[in-house]
Length: 98
Length: 185
Image (cartoon, rainbow over all chains, first blue to last red; front, side, top):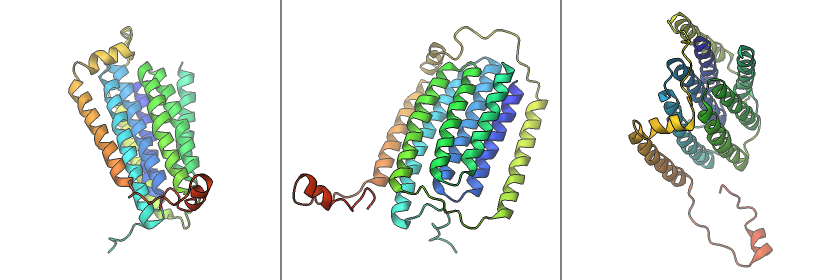
């Protein structure tokens, strides 16, 4: 059953990565990053149950904390970019483009 | 029990597909809330009771509320995808499929067997987590609070605006004068 959960977590992570690469809207990219973090959380909890140590749960606790901090700062950046470019497409932020 | 695991896994995958492929950001956010609830169900099925509750409170209850606030305040809930880049999608799909194949292959060939020993009483409960968190991981706990302070300072610094002079008048007159200035100037 742990193998099943690790495979399931890999599929969720892959879906999140696909979303980060393909989607152009910055907000959807942020949400796909959250999906990737949740996939890793599932993997950590499954392995914690396998080895019967709550250390895995503590790692998940800290991953959630970091995800919350990163979501707040990321959304601040999105608001800042929106103010200056009036767009949330990641391809319109091309001032440094060659 | 297994049936519950497979059923909720299927639902989680469907709602993850909804997150990734939705046209509008708000639809994606709502699918993500559903995904987070289903992940909390998976935590509960894996004997992680405290984490299931924390997931609902922190992720679905705070982070997603923040995301939905930003989407609605910026007013960007619209479809603007335009031309599709099919080759990029195919290459990305191939790359992540290779990743899943490698990872799933490794995990199914590893000698992991769920031991038949019963889990310790209170596994994943708040006392077990607290005992570890405040003894072995207390430094990480304190550093996490510093990290959160840094995130708060950063979020305010990134979004703060200089104070605008308030118009004359009180009540409805002042409100009508500021009506078109909006939240984002």
